[in-house]
Amino acid sequence: MLKFENVSKIYPGNFVALEDINLQIEKGEFLSIVGHSGSGKSTLLKLIYAEEQVTGGHVYFNDRSIDSINRKHLPYYRRNIGTVFQDFKLLPQKTAFENVAYALEVSDETDEEIKELVPEILDIVGMGDKANKYPRQLSGGEQQKICLARALVRKPLIIIADEPTGNLDPVATWEIVQLLLKINSMGTTILLATHNKDIVDKLNRRVIALDQGKIIRDHQKGRYAI
Ligand code: ADP
Ligand code: MG
Image 1 (cartoon, rainbow, N blue to C red):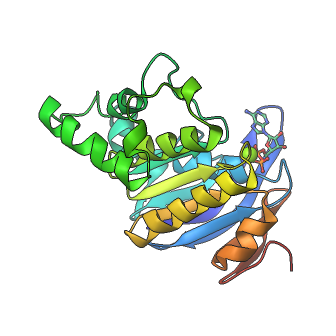
Image 2 (cartoon, rainbow, N blue to C red):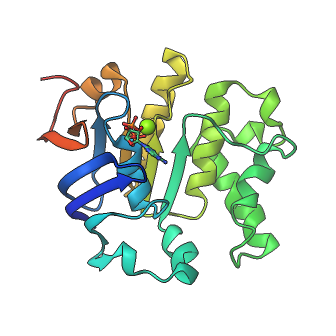
């Protein structure tokens, strides 16, 4: 589904973020990306989301090089991907329902479809009873669940989660991980960048480790450290 072929990313100022990355990710995988701060995790995810462009090599999505996608078509491409970040980025003046519905605003769903779809997705993340709450009335973990709902509502093929539990306590962290597992079991590919050793070790799924922009490890049923 995703393939990195000899990918490098050098930011202006000659900051090498990724160097000669070769990586293949299949549909339905749950892949954790680990490595020190600055090792290139976020950059790797940004290349997939086409938020940054490669300096060398290619990233392919279903055999199509992402850098060949016309700017005009990027929003369509990005519909394949839902994103979740450490800082929740919910709109403070909108309720949970409205935050999720807002993600559908630019698509062609009717109001009726939105009224059906949003509660369905809020139920999946266990926030069905919080639909009318504003972000400030929700805990960090609950806000992150709303973010997950927002990412899911367009039924993406891939969820990119960049340090999604970075601001959460251990209980909320584990709830988010359970949700990612549930979403994965429903068929969505999950790419999780994390610093959290406990998560990675308990997941017991594929792990790639980055160090200074290079893949130093790629293990099925991997652990955080060797
Ligand atoms: P991680 O997510 O693992 O912490 P990043 O992908 O954010 O790593 O960063 C990898 C490297 O690229 C770091 O050295 C970082 O300073 C550099 N970097 C990231 N974004 C930029 C940018 N926009 N401009 C210049 N350098 C950047
Ligand atoms: Mg990062």
